Image (tube, rainbow, N blue to C red; front, side, top):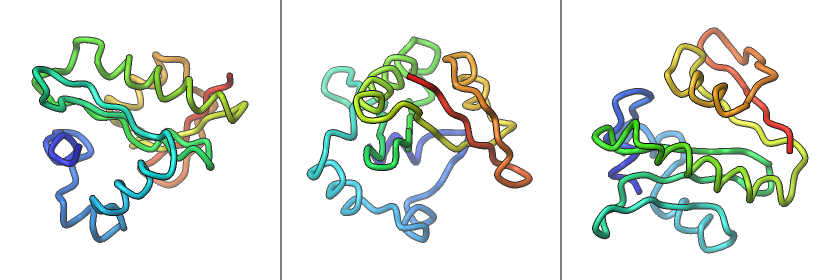
Length: 129
């Protein structure tokens, strides 16, 4: 999954940048072991996209697709699967993203709303069950 995350053009973070904010392969592996919180899309056994939630918090934590696979509905399906699991436990799901990003527009098209400015660059979006 990390190769997908570091390959994206928008909202790019290197492994080192992710490590500085506490996102490491070990942390992610521990989260996955403890709960149903991550899904992957594959093409010939190659991971080409993933979504991940923080189930206790009701948060859509990540949804990324390799740039060469964008526009094929993969991200939409990964988000739908993540939402389904979030709504098993929460009335309201939330996420945070850059307010000027394509991702923000994508999530709004998928029905996420109640936009709240977090700071100058980021917003919080919510979706109700």
